[in-house]
Length: 563
Image (tube, rainbow, N blue to C red; front, side):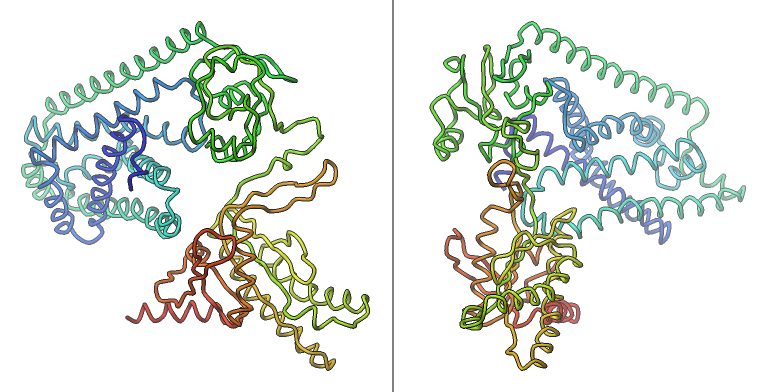
């Protein structure tokens, strides 16, 4: 877990306070959903929750987390050198800034009302107060905003973890159910309270029980909420003024960057060269997105390199791996403070006339290697025409299963092929790959029946299925560069397919792919394989025939449900 906490003190503090607030919101919404069952269940949940959050320690921790989290978020935003950011990050920031505008009234009319006027702010009081009002609609919106903002923060904090990726589809479903459960409970409770308030005697008793605020108390609460909103507006105005002041001052301390065979631009000091390129619309290749995992953003420093900070150990290793010259640097790692003249080594619009796809794209996808068994022995002594005829019939039989499942054949490898399943995410890619393997096996059985009717021996195959990071790009000389796949995942999948012959099975499916497809592998008998050229052992499910794959998986799932 140590890598989850990397970052400066502000980032770590925002993570901690964000987790506290997310936990509070989660149980608050679950509590609200208990209104689906009864008033007693709702009140029981609230009493249990308030025993913690209304205690001295709980109240201090919660309020401190709220103020610190909001304050640090605005502080971090004000310190940014540029407001350019990915769409997901911009969405999270906007949602976070909307929360205080809607939350302040809720806090004032519940927590402040309880402390100042002794209001019994049970859910019955809150639902009657909000029912059939504009404020009630906005509070429903607030619930959704808080939940989406929190879920986004949690996801983008730990999205790189394999266990999170494995459970992501399930967690998304749970995340969608929580606000639906909460809003349903609020509506059911609201209707119950509305019926009770139609009875004069019950209404009077409830008003006394809730210690309902009078007109003067409500006026005071409205005034407090307004002052708190004005304060928040003032904080935002100060942050904006601070940001603009720094921006103006930064222009006075800007740095000039001249691109060989490109423009000359002015940019803020402190940005990486890659950020400078992007902010000024200068095409700059970066296959890994500027995370320092590749060297495609590298530049040759033609002038000004002696004034740059030295490369870090990681950058030096990357440059050494590609035998880069001494004046080469990674654009995503250097932060120019003095004028530079640079040459981009790789350009999306470079002189070689290559399309953007030639630069490559990194995706996490499922791939399949397939090979015909005993092909050499089978075709020895046959005429070339007969060999080609057999292969074409074989591919005609099995390739439609790949295409119909959502895959494409990347390349044919003599008596085998490599297929990739390019879908919107790794979950769907893994599932389509499993479906393709099952269908290939079924179609092969039909093909072998045809061969049997011709007194020809049947065809046996081996298939390897794996999922991981791939680089998809056009590789070859300009004008003659077919798209292909490269990466460690390709090698591992090829080795996996090769092991099917040794294990005498038709199919090997990696545990990684099964997890990505949403299958629990705890009850499966997995093979641990040491594959040549693969750094770590790979766990995989061995299946005698692809047609048995889903049956094996469903048997394990059914056994777990019964237990």
